[in-house]
Length: 587
Image 1: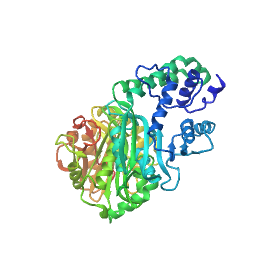
Image 2: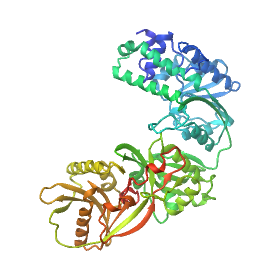
Image 3: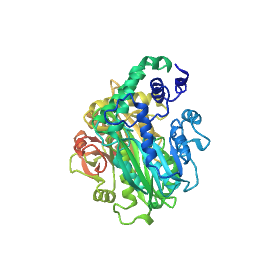
Image 4: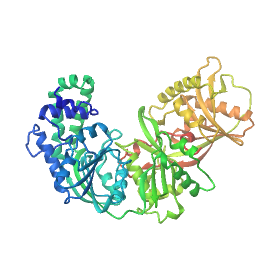
């Protein structure tokens, strides 16, 4: 390996591979970004195409002014800007790139190793914010909220980057940001789109170049960068998928210019753990006399479970749209869903609930970021109250089909005190026996998955049961194990909650075919405790799974579907959800 190539070996994968190959092929590396190729230009002219991409961007900039470059790369662009008379600050969180950039820039460039979130500068410090293939790694809200403060009046944001042009069912979580949502969310943050150029056809050959050069130097890559062959193969497969997404029109490359407008009344942001106290204060204001403690907020949204947006006015949280990320089995396939949870707007900010309201801005942003192809979760569900559902339907955010499986029903039976059952027995699982409980519940969860392989069901592993019930900060739940009396076979675990004379079945783990005899056991033991009723929630498509004699049924809630973002058609979910009261966040 040449001395020059060694300079790039320590970059993070796969940048080390890209830089190494460029160095081997071109003799030097100025940029790590894509090139812009002219029609019929050979992919071997990558160095020329890369410089053309930078020249294209430089030609869009106003006369020399103060620039913040987010994502310094190897420092070549910042160095050119300084030579042209611009006052440049360049940042990157990657210390390895910073180390290389330090050798490529002049003293006129202020270089900082920091994230955009941690970067500090006085308000109105910059006339231009420049992002060359770095915007795709940032949350759009976080980006535009931050730079709105940093920019002078009428300042501009220039972006040249890969982007998703449309979503398809095969998209996996954390795909490239979607172009439509990027523009829309930038506008919500107080920016106007002033120029848009589609550069997809000119940039796409960059992927062809990378595939060609990696294949050409594969042997050198394996030896000099000390990479496993399988790792390089996976990179090539990934690039081939990228190549196909460009060919299919799913991915593209664009230049976008945004101009700063007046700050909007409500700043919409993603919620972090640092915002928990503000969320609790808002909850306590809106739902008084109910209260939310920081402990309860953390139980619900902490440890990366929360997918939430907020509205702020004068640095005070005035709106909150909460979601909880949950692992599910979608017809047997592992996926993620988001449960819609707390929705609240300060009384002082409840203007007419239109498409200019804080609620609309929060909810649309939430749906765009979190539900659908290529986002955080595959699908969403929730238990909205009638008022919220009515508004959301009117604004085109949520919908409800009058189909089986879109409604939660409460089933109730009178208790039947009596002697122990002949064929089954029931006992408590003790919280101080976690290893034994884990073995029992995980085995029953495997059986439950098989019995619900044609349904949509939340994961009921021991880890989930322990978190949801045993670690709940306020409620005390009991775990009851029902087994065969003579063989000891575990039929199921039922989670119950006692409330005066009612025994609530919150959840069930096991093969659903055993539910009728299990409910009979719960009715008997609840009767022996002196209780009068056993009640359980279930989606209406699974009512017949429960015993129907002496039953009372009452409609409780509708399960809406997302009608805003790029989503699964609602008919794919209808008649398939398995939801009980334990799938809520408030019972």
